[in-house]
Length: 479
Image (cartoon, rainbow, N blue to C red; front, side):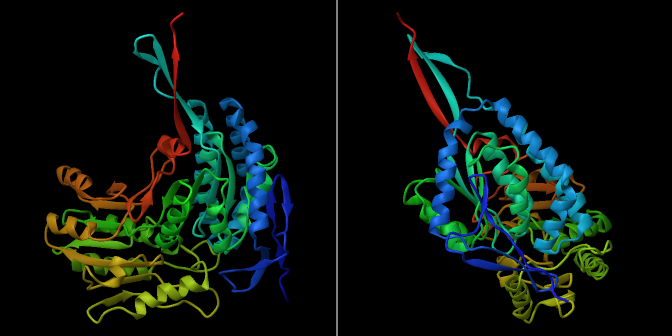
């Protein structure tokens, strides 16, 4: 019995369209490894059309009142809530994620984040006006930047799309958004829903590959390029954007340290680390995958974490007992497997370390100990359900090991000592420091990193401001 292959299409200027030249990409299920859909392989003509539509729609959308933009975003949030089951089904088809977890852990935050930015639309304000030179009044205006070219990743196709379009639209920008070539289904569905509430051209979706994304960033129309992806992709975007001085917003991955001191509650810490390390198959830039444990509790911790990994299950999307689904694609399975195959002799696989089954990109929950700071698996992002464990002797060494990577997105500290927690939060060179927890995010607080994790913030008022520009207006008040 064969599965019907669906045809996905671009969404440009309020219409669904095939690629201008008719080219398509096969979209493969990470659960079955079978083609379930085709999507457009958008070329220059499609990029031109989307950018033209967004540019034409910008003046009117810019000039809407904040209240009008808020109203549209609130309607979108309500519609996403009403269509939750359809969105969950599309996202699970995209990624193989468990249906129950996607329903409970992704849709509610997405809806909440849209509603947050709907409210933020009405706080688009500058600092107070005043006379800083005799006879002259100064005013600061906050304005939208213009057309935004946005590229979303495959690990959270729906949620990362929300993180991009919600602040951009709230601030009065128009958007051309490209989903990953492996996960276009849920983004196309979102466009269908959003089209009911937005004027034509305000929100556009282009499907395609890396060349499509490259053409979007290189296009002269966008005033800003935003990408969530690899460091390599971020560097390429920054280089391309520099040619015409586009604003750039980059979220490029992480290698989050989890620092566990001897006074931490081992059982609670292991539970928190295993959940935050294996969630979404470890395909999360903030995943708790690099654990640093004080030498006095190292062995106890490793034993407990290996057991937690053995008790963690991966499997089919409709299995309510699974903690995570497959890796997203064949290349990612190859990458994760490669890290384990290349482990140095001094490393020890405490749990997992192998593919699960012979169909689908499933990988076992894995724990690796005995590692050194300069090992490949410590320095580079695995982006899979693999947790590494190192030991440290004191607080100074813990900070040295934690900061001793090129990424700087997120981190966590596990201790009962308040002073130590405060010292560590100051010393850790990461955009987020969690204390006795790891991975919770809220719409009101910023998310973004330093170093090769990129720059710019998602979520919060800071993320909203990234999609605005500041103008100084000075006027004479003398007769």
